Length: 214
Image 1 (cartoon, rainbow, N blue to C red):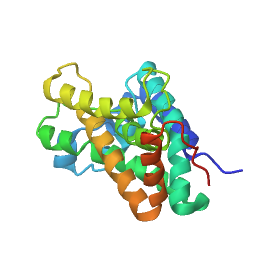
Image 2: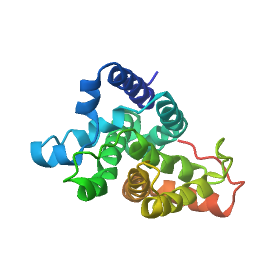
Image 3: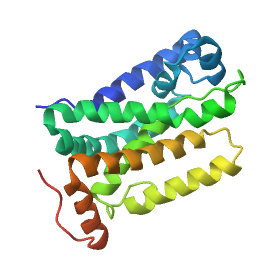
């Protein structure tokens, strides 16, 4: 029986978030702070910030989404790299997405000690794309939309809110995590398992086509 990388990520994130709620110093050391990264070289914050959350609702929403998307991601990476390495590849994909999703925020806020961000949204936004491309017309529970509409709409909405919003939500991380996920997943599929892209295209044009299987 293989170990679910997604469940390991969820368990670690739940523990780290709970720890951060109990220990303010731990929270302060984990969150993304561009000025601290620039002045003190605390580059680990690009990744550690993805494992702590503001509150229970923030944590539950992200971990629920990761639970839904993660199984599709592990399945797809298993096709690309085999069942043994697939889980590790998905983990690296998730971590890379968390880091990449904060690059724009770093550029914008590297001299602002008051700016902090946290949460797994960058990684979760990237993990959305294997879910979308394995079943573009599968309906997501909330919001109740087909996966392909959810994926495209999520990028467009995040871009709009990143440019115009002032609601204190890190829309930049959502946007760049999703863009990274789409580009990286499509690129890796093209290199290591082009049948995944062929399957996506068939599904997109023929919603009632066969399910993908190993």
